[in-house]
Length: 214
Image: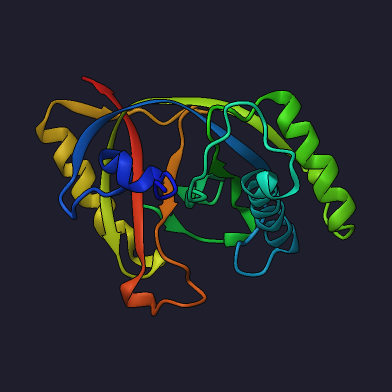
């Protein structure tokens, strides 16, 4: 029997960069997304958003166990949690944070292409019945093409990301690009480590910023 499909291993260029910045053209991908506002360390809204994302993702992944597997289903590893971040208290050039409660975010988990609108609606209904404390209607199925970006592997606490971002900014200037932040293109993090189980100095996070030619 073939092992479950692992997006991180099959598409290493998207999920396993080095600690030196690289330029990448990110294709369109399918996600479940939940939008919100608040400090991820203290916000109940953030905690619920992550619970909904994982609840829906595992409901879909495990659908074959109950005989509800959608057409085209294949076994796979649920991809890592991701986040798009912005807010009035954040300088996106330096990532200086004055008040984490003003964060705006879209939290994401990638989905296989067999997840249609119908499959997603089924998962929402199934999760609502199983976990009545959650509100799956806060989530949406979203296709997102990020396009041309620079990315780097940041190792260490989230609050030290400015060190990696400075390397990214120096790199893109040297290569003849500029940062291209907009409402459609945000500061992007992909969480390769579980902060509940990993020491802060060992956390691994892909940091990705959109760029454009000068």
